[in-house]
Length: 60
Image (cartoon, rainbow, N blue to C red; front, side, top):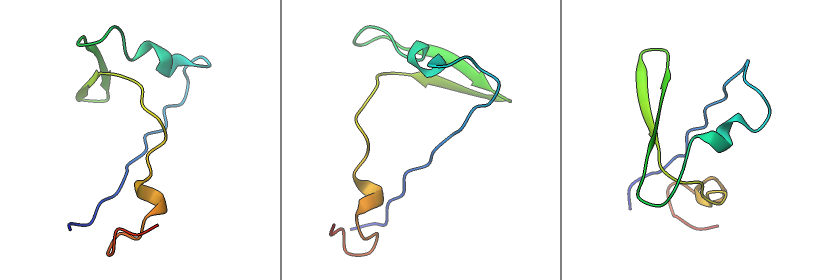
């Protein structure tokens, strides 16, 4: 099993709950740019369990 990590991005200077605009209906994307990088927002998801797992063993 390969090592995994979950990257977080914090964006400053936007209104509260701004991130809720980064997705839309199923199968659709919302384009947004941070610096010179374009992202496609797809869907919200629940909190990832990867950070709570051992990155070598995959165990909680």
